Length: 362
Image 1: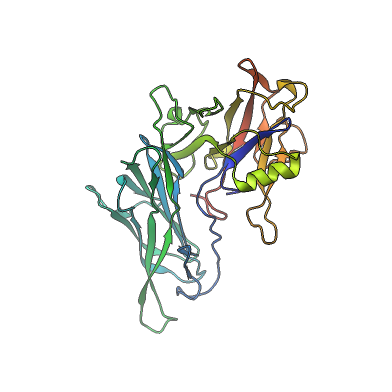
Image 2: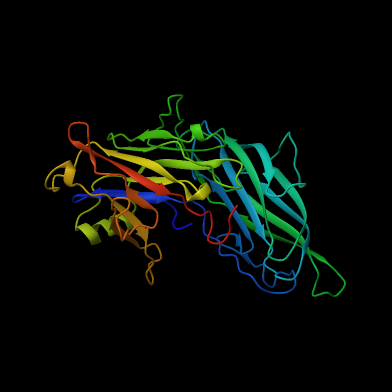
C-alpha cells in the first residue's frame, strides 16, 4: 500500500485529504535461498513480525454493528524448496471478537469449522517456492463504540528439510496485526458517527456517510467494484483530529496549523483499479481564505520519509481529474468545489485504492 490513509486537511485556502490504504504495516517479503529454513524466514520482535508472514485486520476502524476481515498470508520465500505441512493459524483477541466465517485463497484447503473458538486454522499442505497462500477470517465484535479491539495473532507452521540431511523440522513464525478502533454503528440509512468501517461482499452496502461534532462530513459512495481475491471488500471513512505529523506538514506548507479535522478514506485496490468517489464537506471556510468557497483548494498528505523522521509528511494540492501533471498518486478532483450550507464548501474526489502490502496481491 502506498500509505496508511488517504488523508485531507483544511487550511489557508486549502483542504487536506488523506486516502487510507490499510492500517496494517507494510511487509516487504524477501525472496531467495534454496532451502526452506529459518535462515531466511526470520522472526522479528517488537513488533512481532516474521518476514514471510503478513497479518492485517481491516479496516482498522470498524463500526460496532459491522463485520471486519483478518488476513493471514504466507509467502514461501525459498525459491527452490517446498514448504510442506503448511498450516496458517489465527488467534483472536481474548475478548471482543467472534469468527463468523473462514475461507482460503486456494481450493481444496481444510479449514476450521463452526462452532468457532478463539483459534482457527487452515491446512494448505505443500506450498512451492515463491508460492503465496492466504487465510481469510471474517469477524464481528461485541465491543461498544470508543473501545479498542486488541491485536490478532497470526502463525505459519511448516516443515523444513534441514539442508537436505534427511531430517525435517517443523518451524513456526508469528506476525501480529495492529489494533482496531471500534466506532459508532452505521444506521439503516447509511449514517455513521464521525468515523465508520466495514467489510462486505455487497457493493451496494459499501457506501455510507460520517459527520463529526463540528458538522464536517466525509462520505464514501458505493464502491464501483470489489477487491479481487478477498471474500469481502473493506472500507472505512471519517474525520480525525490532525496528527502531530499532519500539523507539521500544514505549518511547513501553509504557515498555520491545520484549521479542520483530517478526512480519510481507506479501501484496497479494486478490480481494474476502479476509483471510488469521496465527498468531503466543510461547514465553514477559514477566515484567511480570500474569495470565499470558490477559491478554496484541497490538499492531500503524502508520506515523505526523511532521515531521522520516517513519519514525515508533505502536503500537496489536489488538481482536477485529467490535469497533468497530477502530484497525487491516487486522487483528483471531480470538478470545481461547490457551496455547502450557508458558509461552507464541498469537494468530490476520485480516489483509487491502496495495496494491502508492498508486494502481494490477494
